[in-house]
Structures are given as C-alpha cells and as structure tokens.
Amino acid sequence: MKVSGILPVMISILVIITVAVVQKQSKLIAAVTATMPVTIPLSLWIVYAGAGGNPLAMQEFTRGMLNGIIPTVAFVVAIWLGARVGMKLTALIILGYAAWAVTLAGLLLARRFLSG
Image 1 (spheres, one colour):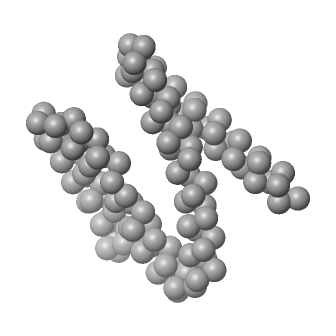
Image 2: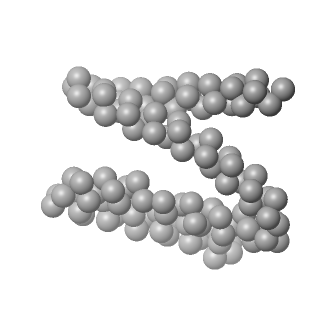
C-alpha cells in the first residue's frame, strides 16, 4: 500500500486518540480537534497526485467539497439540537445522518435544477 493510502488512516487514528485523551481536560479543544480539516489536505494530495496536478480536476473536486460542507454543518446542528433535548447517542447519530442526507439531497437537486 502506498503512503498516500496509509497516511490518512494513521492521521485519522491520531486525531481519534487525541480527542479521546483531550476530552477529559477540555470538551472545546476535543471538539475543535475533531472538526479540524485533517482529511481535506490529505484528500487534496491524493486527488492532485491521481489527476497529475490537473487544475480542472482540482476545481471539480473542491467544488464537490463545498457541497459536502453544508450537509456536514446540518449534521452537527441536528445532533446539537438533539443533545439539547436529551437524545441518546444512537438517536443522535441517526438524526445527524438524516439531516446530512436530506441537506445533501436538497443541494444536489437544487444544483441540478439551477444548472438546467
């Protein structure tokens, strides 16, 4: 396996371990660590290398990333609202993914509708 395949996994494991350790001292720092844009640069590197540095491929990929950020925000808002009303972990995760899926579907439909 290439470094480009192993490195993201290793960094993801490091982030998870960091969150597990830091959350005992500071929920805020743990949350910020959990939401750091770690996979974005790694993904950019993988796509850049795979596309031979093609700027159009990078533009298409980063535009797709924009479509992913808004549903991710919806995921976090939904689980925050669910936690405020006392939902349990499994329900929070289901609620978050439902909000993510609905938001993503809405964005993709709007993009398709607006582009003709």
